[in-house]
Image 1: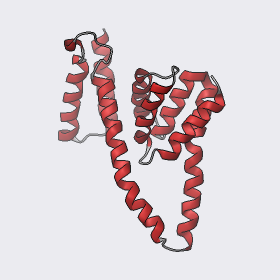
Image 2: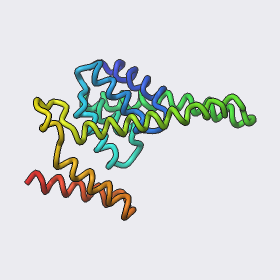
Image 3: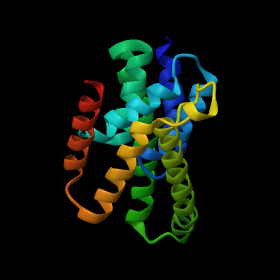
Length: 182
């Protein structure tokens, strides 16, 4: 695997994935279609791991995908590529806003907010698809992953009703996964 290619592809993602780490998911699913070193299953697993690990979600997903593609050097190249454009852009914006309230910058943010919402919604649907549905099913009734669907509904209701710390739900999901495997 070419480390420069990893850095370049993740730099493009970092440049356009406005809205946080989950906004990288639609771009990652696009990489799945473009390259053989990444699959939807890897992205789904990486997203689950990134959500439960400390740190920025997008960087965690990039590091996971990079590690899968090229080991530790790939992990470092992908994470650095994802972060690089943000550092440059934030530095420029902070410099602009430090001098005065810039109407152009405010107008840009007004346009970017709905875009970020759309990217996050697309990411949510992408994760839902890979988590609850089997895209490789040969017959329609094998399309659904029943255990995952039940766990999703139960946890969704618990999250809305109980409003506990997210770590509680992650632990419950992990325990459920272990229970179902045994």
